[in-house]
Image 1: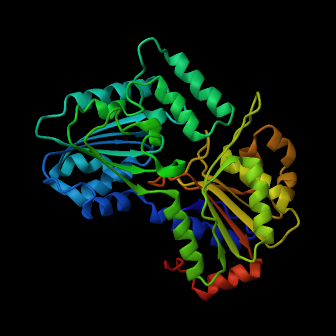
Image 2: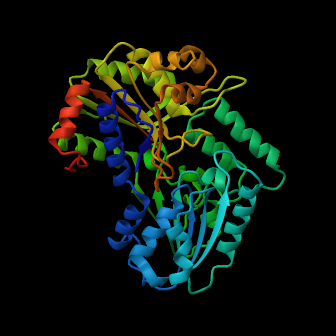
Image 3: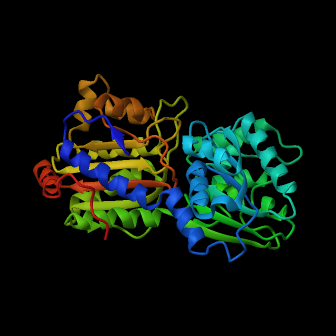
Amino acid sequence: MVAENLTGHGESRRRLLLELFRAGLDRVDGRSCVARALRDGAGGGASLAGIWIAAVGKAASAMVLGAHDALGRSIQHVLLITKDDHVSAEARSLSGIGPTVEICESAHPLPDERSLEAGARLLRWVDELPAHAQPLFLISGGASSLVEVLEDGVTFADLAKINSQGMAEGVAIGELNARRARVSRIKGGRLAARLHGRQARALFISDVPGDDPSVIGSGLMGPAPGGDNVQRTIVASVHAAVDAVRGAAQGWGLRVGAPGRVFDGDAVRLAIRFAHELQLSQAQVCVWGGESTLELPANPGRGGRNQHLALAAARLMTGQPNLALLAAGTDGTDGPTEDAGGVVDGETVARISLGGLDADRCLVRADSNAALAASGDLVHTGPTGTNVGDLVIGLNLSPQEAEAVLERHGGTRPPML
């Protein structure tokens, strides 16, 4: 459920955008996607007994529940490594109804000492797998920070520098993950190599362009150099989320434009592109999926790439009463904040000014969280159970037209095509 502080400004359009975002999240929910993949035979037909699960990433809790839905008592042991406050009560309670569940809460978006502890535990887990056990790995975005075992001679300070520099420079996720893998004993396929040819399964929720297992989580459970015996399946990606948003909007009778290419690059440049496409398009809804980058100033404020993109778009939409735009992370977080992103319209900049802040200055300082908090435009979801990158949804619809859409369907969820 998307929770947002609706203050009355453009409420109907904001409700519509939030419902469309929720439709995208539902399609790529980690629990349902994993359960469906396992029930459909993504595991490769091995007998379902003695399954040991290692789940790593921001969607690990939901993925474990999906595996339990599909495999039940066949699961003997679960190692669940995820971000603080991302373990559901239901996942914690699994030990009471069957498998042993070991939980490690670790650091994200930047690693800390707990990341090294979790990485060491994961390495031991692989090395100590019983002969009868069938390993199942559940990997989602965030694994790059949550677990690490460093190469000899590499210090934690070296790792911290790689991460902080990469994020400050706005390095694309693929390149940043490659840098991380070069100093790791478990990334870049090295964990898979540790299985020494043993059969295993790995299911991935992808948050990277191309949905490449050698990039997801810096290659945690990517192919081992020289090959391995791991069957890999992508169970959710941003393409599915975009398709779900498109289907929901069409189901509500709206004209939809949805470019097929996954977006990347600078958040401000993307904001300019999206705002122009939304303004010039004949569509009433435009949806884009991908992941932007943000180069930080020397002393940044508080915010994330989606909030920054939303704020930049709001400046371009000023005075255009029919335009509104949502930019949010599908994992429910955006940078080092607890907010998923922002939902803005043609009056956002004015509301920021009424709150005593300057939108341009906040952009320069990378202080988008403060600006959107002042205007009441932050989107907060909490952990979503998935992580397929970011969704940007634009609306070219008057408040009256949006209200008519909502009323016509009785406030129900948008139908899926």
